[in-house]
Image 1 (cartoon, rainbow, N blue to C red):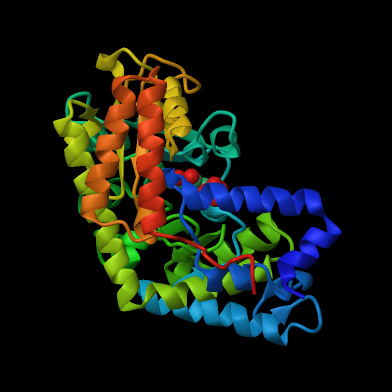
Image 2 (cartoon, helix red, strand yellow; image 1 turned 90 degrees about the horizontal axis):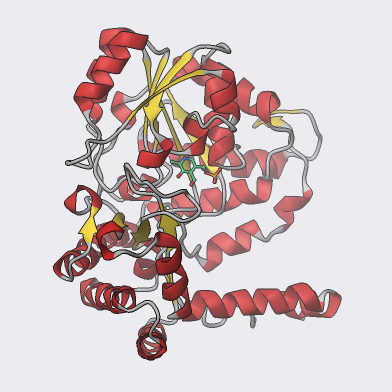
Length: 419
Ligand SMILES: Cc1ncc(COP(=O)(O)O)c(C=O)c1O
């Protein structure tokens, strides 16, 4: 009996929600920059009996018996990650990006040590020192920002602040930053003040793996990332580091932060890494970037200001301030038209994070379903149509029809629930 039929027999409520979510993912345009569609092979590993096993510890050093296959799959993931990213040490156990970052801080810092990182409302992440996050409560946080005009990280400010506060750790990486990072300049500042350099590449690691984004691994002491965004794997995190930090990092992940590793996720991470070395994945990464450029070009041409004037990566931030509409209302109207984005503060936003003056738009998911530059230019036009008249039901109906046509031309997960 197919697996999903058994689910429907046992729990029709969850099975209904699953079918409904499949329908949403198949028939709407997902432009949330941090999301993607994992492959059926990744889903198979993630939804497997690996979830039944406790494997506290690391390969060949477990606290439980019966771990031979766990050792096999975790070592496979480690070896593949080392080969792909060219790093000295890998920890594949973090349950998510937040756990990866927190483990790094625990491994390398003492409470009260300084971290210099990007402001949350300029695109940073809450694990980079938000007051409600453990990072903001345990460490002394100083933030740099982007320039008001340039929209880019101001390396002069980074250096000035680093010289002033002498942080133990300098951190770059973001959730909503559309440009490449000046890795060499960050390394130079870190060396000048004797700080460790950490890159949180959660958003762009798939682009790095695919060769479509500069690689920070050789210049950084630590690189963390999530596996479910552009990497197109299961939900999870990973840490890459130099050998000298390996022991401390491993100890911080387990037993410092976590108990038993999610072996089903680690199996799916191994599958993700096998996929990431293929020529198809390299082509995918480049297409994500090309598609974002095509979409950005249309939005700009239609009069929408993009922070920093455009994008180098998979996402863009659309500033709606001069249109007199909020990010919240824009995202709601787009969702009603079959296009899913998220509201997002823009740098120097005067509105709250619940309202915002911007939206964040990203191309990883639509590129996975096979959209090229032409389709992405069309998507840009549809977004501009909806934003041009948020109240119009006629526009939304027309856009919904165009979305249906685009989705039908690029089907996804066609036989996922039947086997
Ligand atoms: C830059 C950055 N770091 C860390 C994370 C945290 O990842 P997770 O949600 O898996 O904890 C995110 C998630 O959006 C992120 O964008």
